[in-house]
Length: 159
Image 1 (cartoon, rainbow, N blue to C red):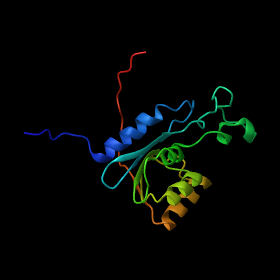
Image 2 (cartoon, rainbow, N blue to C red):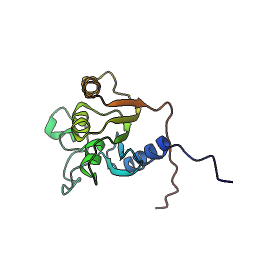
Image 3 (cartoon, one colour):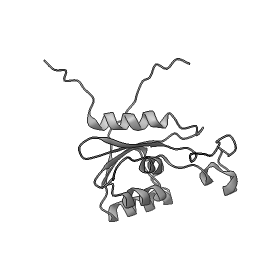
Image 4 (cartoon, rainbow, N blue to C red):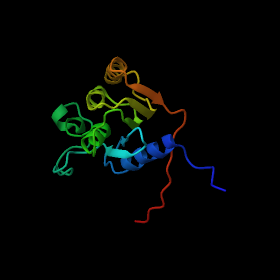
């Protein structure tokens, strides 16, 4: 008899997003994203970090009042990284993200053709960036689904 206590597809793909987030060197927020086709094939993964080719020791990881001295001027968000890392067209795909996307990432999600957004945390729900994001996603017909539970992964990594 086959095993029946397997994890759900949502937990599987959100787990991949969490695993990707573990690559982020951001000291305060680690975010991961996983893009999946309608046939459940992973076609893109990403995490928040600096663009390829930039030495992350030469740029700030802190928040700062001066934009050019802040990480926000340089970090590529997980969603955009996953889109840029995609191996195929994203028309009709779903994206799993550990944190609801900002307005800039929402633009990229919409433009890429992703139709479903599955997320865990919405801790910035009242910020102008997330309010704008939700407005655009709704207008573009992107379905947004918040998981009703947190997905956790457990690794036994020896260092």
